[in-house]
Amino acid sequence: MTDTDNRRLLRQLFDAALAVAQPSQCLHHFLPPPVKGRTIVIGAGKASAAMAAALEAHWPDEDLSGLVVTRYGYAVPCKHIEIIEAAHPVPDEAGLVAAQRILSLVQGLTADDQVIMLISGGGSALLPLPADGVTLADKQAISHALLKSGATIKDINTVRRHLSAIKGGRLAAACYPAKVVNLLISDVPGDDPAAIASGPSLGDATTCKDALAIIDHFSIAVPPAAREGLASGRYESVKPDDKRLQNVTTHLVATPQRSLEAAANAARAHGVTPLILGDSIEGEAREVGKVMAGIARQVVTFQQPLPTPCVLLSGGETTVTVRGKGNGGRNVELLLAMAIDLAALPGVSALAADTDGVDGQSEIAGAIVTPDTLFRASRLGINALDYLSNNDGHGFFQALGDSVITGPTLTNVNDFRAILIR
Image (cartoon, rainbow, N blue to C red; front, side, top):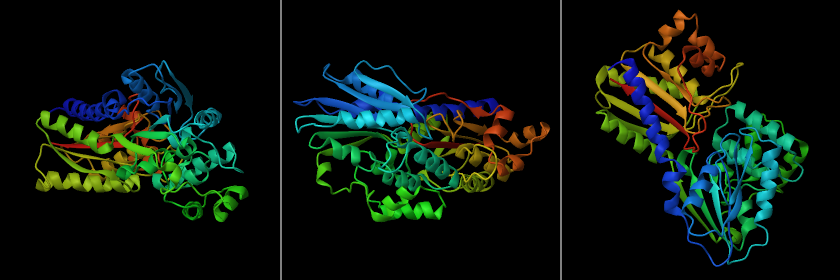
């Protein structure tokens, strides 16, 4: 097989993972029936507009209204549900206004009404309604610091929930006594529904004490009012046993595991044996890259844990502690570290990309590594170690023309990695 063939197959596996997670393909299976009263649709996330369009396409009548907020460039036209765009990953004023409007839409509902919540990854930044005493500027600064700190998404969302007036179950509680149906696309390791978009529609088991410990561990600067709200417990989130959540049901309509299984099926169709290493792999991106390189080397050298041709598939969400001047990007950092560790090992190619089309703060999904990656870089005078030290994986792969660019994918089931070994 040629390098071109390998690149094509890797991209086909990625496309298969994306296809099965498209709202148009998976959401309608979980729609509730209409109720006696009103049906209001609200939501947030990078996939929320596509989810709203899929809902409208299968809803049996015209009695439907609502509002969802999605990332700039991710809007999809809808007839009855209003779509608002806002900033991600650092929130902006448009997201604040959208959050305020969403909260107002669910006021005064009755037991005859239902709320369908369309929640996907990115919803945390897109619903930035701060707790009392915290400003939008405060949330922006805290979000930016957390994203650069190396904190896991679990830790980041714990802080977000407790500095919010809408997350951590507060939005679902505001809907009471109406029926709430959560339709979620998971982008979090372990598929914990309460962790997706910081859980606006589910009870939260974490505490203010947990959030304050994370802030102190990563030395995140917070205003005095925020620290007091956490220390006193005044910012405590809604807990899972709260009676206002008794009418809430939840469905995961797309998950990282289902996308990995779709990619595995596509690999088999091409005569390549797949092995799914896990859908919730976490850790510092460059260290995970070294681990992946070690597994690939074992396959090449000993045909273990499976013989070639094969593909190692995995998902999850690694982290990047940004110390250099680059923009980070966990998928490209992982790939660059992996390429350096492999040292041009023959027969190994890989793709790593974020399924939402955005790796870090760059409008690039990820990249592809081939056995000659380091050789081609050297011919251009590019030192891979320097780029890794500077957290500039995107700059490295852009210079080689090896970036994976999808544009808005309209879904988000976290990171996708495929290591092809022939």
